[in-house]
Length: 552
Image 1 (cartoon, helix red, strand yellow):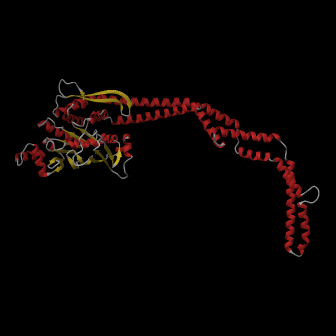
Image 2 (cartoon, rainbow, N blue to C red):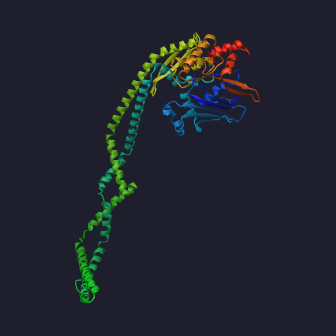
Image 3 (cartoon, rainbow, N blue to C red):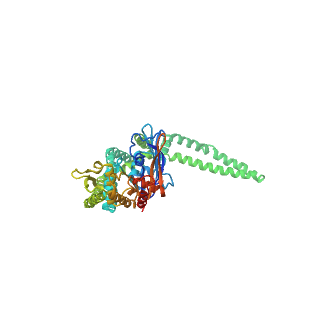
């Protein structure tokens, strides 16, 4: 629902605000007052390309802004994902705007944030339907025509099943493509992967082995120095001839011990000397044991160095530390295993994708059947509505053409019209005049059930070339549509204006430059406007009584 419309410097409109009611809203006024600019303004908010000369004389740019009430789940549609990301927290309504610049460019805005014009188009397709001599785009779109037929055929459940089947198909195909890409990538590097695994397996690195071998390498390269140092130290502690450090410590303990009788501290010192002598003796034994335990193995150092060079070679080849190389080898082994099993996995995924495709085709076939069954009766229903709207000779057709399966099935719908006898049928938007197009849009909306389509419907020139009984029929159809949608009608017919829920007069204000104002009418002002539309002069009481009768 459109909550408010604000316009600045758009052609004759210097500044105007419109707050339409729910239900049926009419806009009336003298010819040339600027009523059609309202359709232009709403079209701009739906992403239409701006026509030349729309910037008025009251500034260097034109600005149009509207606020909409949002239906529940509105932003769940995938095509609105970009716009949904612009939504400020806590915003319950949608604010869209369009700024036209003197340079000829324009800016699209959502909640005051810049967006693409295509985003406004996506929003407009879900919020608005505009039908006028200037705006046939919506009704001409294949997606909208398909939507109208589906509304009549009541295919909601079939459409939901189709959408789910399509999602499953896309997911299955994506999984298959990803597996194919991985298999192709692995196949390209298969030799490299196998070489890495082979070299890592040949190295057979044990946990902790590199650190242990590096320490052993250092020891083996300095083994002679180690033996000489241990032997010399043992000789100093306990030589084969003479006294060493151990014997001297023992003698020192013997010398000091008698003095401990007179000085307790020396007794303790003597005990420490005896303990030191014992520890020196143990050290001497361990040193000689180390010397005697060393076995000369010239090949061991060569083996250790060879192992370490193997590790270093792996690190150089793969430009990574050894632990990372081993991790890479584990990944390569897993990749090779997947590659070995990839053919079976690809077959499984291909079968799943084909099954999903078959389900999508079956869902599309059910949709096609339902649409085909409804097409002829839908066409006759539209013709019946057109007859009530003064187009009794019009012939309406629904052509269903096959297309590739997609989220909405495998059909393309073309709505065709032969407005007069003897004329060939053609696409509605190409064969109908502006007024006819508005009446056709109204007839289709009624025939396709009023709940089908966007919540805001703008009709311009729906009254072109009609009057009397047909005018009353149009008014009745508009009331019927307004039960399920917000309808804005630009009209010259008092029969339509008389049944409106809200009536706005567009009036030209004198001045230099001339400007336009939009005023909501109530009470006597509303009756005066209806009397004017009936052709009554000022003070024409008969016209006023007729106007009051129209209001019922």
